[in-house]
Amino acid sequence: MTTETRSTGFAGAQPILSVHNIPATVRYYTDVLGFKNAEWGNDSFTCVVRDRASIYLCQGGQGQSGTWVWVGVEDVSLLYEEYKNSGARIRMTPKNFPWAYEMHVEDLDGHVLRFGSEPLEDKPFDPADFSASLLSD
Image (cartoon, rainbow, N blue to C red; front, side, top):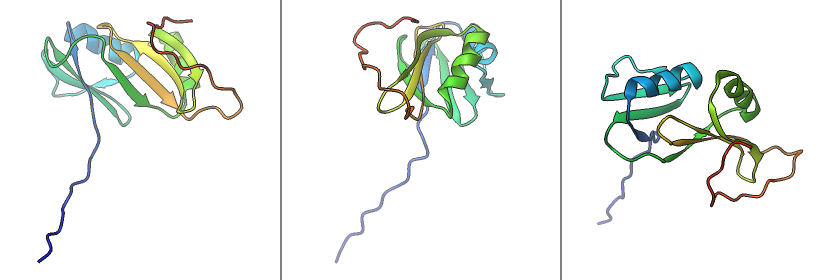
C-alpha cells in the first residue's frame, strides 16, 4: 500500500506591522503612499491595500519597529516620482540590482518598505550594501 502525500497551495503572504498610532499610520499609508484602508479596520488592527499588496497594521503588538517588507510593483520609476511628490519618507532612491530596480520608503514607525520592479537592462547594477542604515541619497 502506498501513501499519497498531499500538500496545499499557498495564497500569499501579508506582513503584520506593529505601529504606535493606527490613525496616524493609516493617514500616512493612505494619503502619502496611496493605499486604501480596510472597511473593517479599527483603532487596534487594520489592513491597508494597494492593488494586490496588503499590509496589516497592529497597534502596540505583533512585532516591533524596524521590520523590512518587500513589495513588488510594476514600475519603481513611476512610484518614485509619485512618492517624491506626495512627501513620502524616501530612505533610498531607486537603485538597479540583479534582483530588482528597487527603492526604500520608511513609515512613521521605522518600518522599511522595499519597493521593486524588474531590473533595468540598460543600466549597470549598483553595489548592494544594506549593512548600514541607508538614508535618502
